[in-house]
Image (cartoon, rainbow over the protein chains, first blue to last red):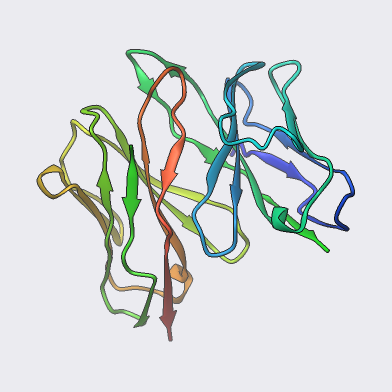
Length: 118
Length: 116
């Protein structure tokens, strides 16, 4: 069964350091999402890609966070510099399509990267 | 604005009991999608069900069943004859397609503990 891959699974870093997370969506999925889940809360969208284009990054703290999906397949999320408040689970998801007038597909999630900032 | 409320923070039951997880949503859109996901201690979100706003049929899948009622904006989830393996955090989520974005709006989750 196809799955969303993420690495690393765990990351511990000190504040002011740079960190990067990688996501490989299910093959053929055009839409890729990065969510952040703070302990005890539901996930919240950081950024959404349709192929290689960003379609929603309204909740991405752009002064320190960046995301790219250069070839429209895998994606990298970077934080520089990391702050204590960035400690969270970072979840990647993918879906087959979004098409106006046709609706959306189910989002399937990867195992996540648990980030701890000391 | 869209919102999902899961009023039950934590539920504890003994194995074989039936349990219902409540979900209430808010949206002004007429076309929307509702989801349930399971998050075991490993952290991965596991998809359970997807419903669109035009399909109010209840659904049963094994021990799982879902009751969608637009009149009360609710999408409740029932586990029949619960098992220890059902212990997890369960999230209800809402999605509305708007300007090519369909982000999931999650509730705060309900932690289910099933004791043997």
